[in-house]
Length: 358
Image (cartoon, rainbow, N blue to C red):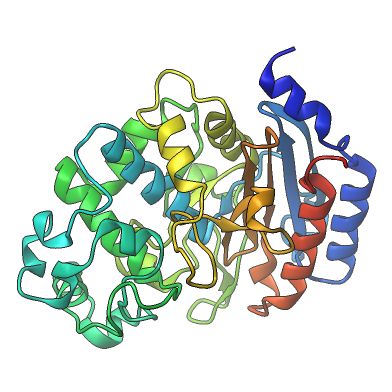
């Protein structure tokens, strides 16, 4: 019996019926129109779908291969993984100052910020994007504005989640690699891990029918479908570190499986995962790893880590227990309220990744 098998034997059996019942209640309560879930350890052990793709077309059931706008999970599958590729290749260090990679930051507050500050949300950069209001609609003007913006507070003083951290790290990836973020991550991560559907939007018209719609676009009167809900991502043409990626449960399962059992192909693996899935913020609260954070309802030593997306997505991973889980919903179809989906996520995590049996 190998170590991973022993870890799996400690985990509760997957309560498929309970998961299905939980998510069906979410559909009935209009937390989301539908949901897709998958659980693995390391490969897929169980998966399912409930509800409908679009309430306007109630005969179209949600399918396990539905494509979702994963929103802030872009920060994990695109930015975090790309930084990991560069880190493991020795092309970037966590204590690198940004002015060593981004010449525009020389002489500005961001120049003193490190890669580690950004990955732990301790950089002291402004908390909200507000890109168009501050810098206009030109991508070059946005880049210069973001990189030369005044600090919100001194770096290292507090943990404050901000989308700008991922946007800036996306610029770092592009500066070091010499490639646009979408091309670099596709070649270095998504293709090697067989994440064949994962891509930055807008999705091609041939794939739009598989996409779960999100929030209402007041300019057209239709729900966004195959187009990123995040305004910053749309402003930047669909590709940015903040959001904009689309994926499926199967692709996210391949990604999470790689975190548990790194295989040949992708250029990031066990070292980057181990570095990221440990507390990196010392006594500062809330505790953070590198872009990942301990799942709500768990203690850091439980080693269940999570990242969420605003559209209603989530990815949990626990190398300690040899299991991962993903939940994909289009809750944004109904509301921006965070509380109902938080309750479902916490219950889903408790059912699927509750830790070893005592």
